[in-house]
Image 1 (cartoon, rainbow, N blue to C red):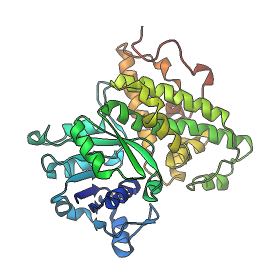
Image 2 (image 1 turned 135 degrees about the vertical axis):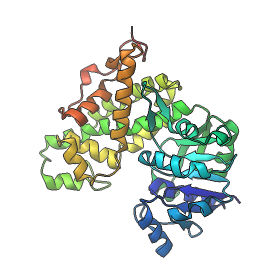
Image 3 (image 1 turned 90 degrees about the horizontal axis):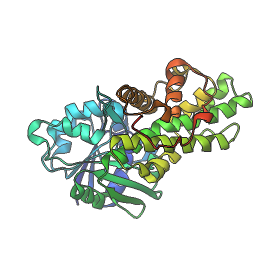
Image 4 (image 1 turned 120 degrees about the vertical axis):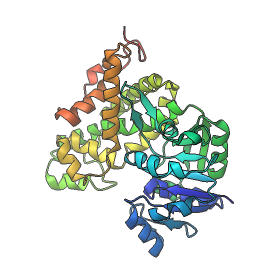
Length: 372
């Protein structure tokens, strides 16, 4: 039995306690400063109010002030913060980590550099370690399709653990693999994590078609729009050909960006890319945002309708589009290879009409870059 400390009590971080406890490990779930109410609820009744599930009885729920004690003796630390919490994790957790204890990040995103560089979060976190710990704490990450409440319910789930240290990846996989949580391994951090981040952006793009179809049957009133913001809300006008075209273009553009990152572009068409994109367009805040935008609702209004929840799709669209423009200025990439990405940016930032530029989609003879 090992001790696993999960930092971040959001839905996915908390759901990771299910395979961990099923394998007999002791789990300490530590809330961030934003998770105080969640931790209080788990301590009182064992109920997670956003995951809407009872937590495993053996999970020890800890407030952020108990972080030091929760990290004592940990054999694995799981970073369960959102992309907006990465810097908090770097500032408050990394300095407390012990040597040779692996860190498994479930955070999806890329860190943008000033020169157009896009850095996977595991590499960014490693660069934020105190100098004496660099190279002595292995960082791993999770990619692939995983809906938190389905993992908590022990639904069959297939994911990829990646990391530069193959031995550490194998160790973490052995700790968490169960009969329902199926884990494969990869050392291609850029490929796996690139897909994990990009699918959030492109799920918004595919979901534009959902809102456009709703608009075609007059689903424009404020009450129906509010109902759309409810998790699991059905399509008002099920139309799938446009979604399929957007899905295919998303995979193509993801493959081009992964290649720019130095990863295996074929991952965009399998579990880390297409698989994760598939589950993301079927539910969650990213689908709801894309659907609202597809109805013609401006982004500021849509954001308010979603109660200003964390919108990682918006962050990644902004980060990647900025990086590609910087690279295009140096002749390293053609912006015309990413028509869906820049269409999404125009909808968000400029209030452009949501109708995607289908005529610009597909292969143009070259898979990515450089420009000629």
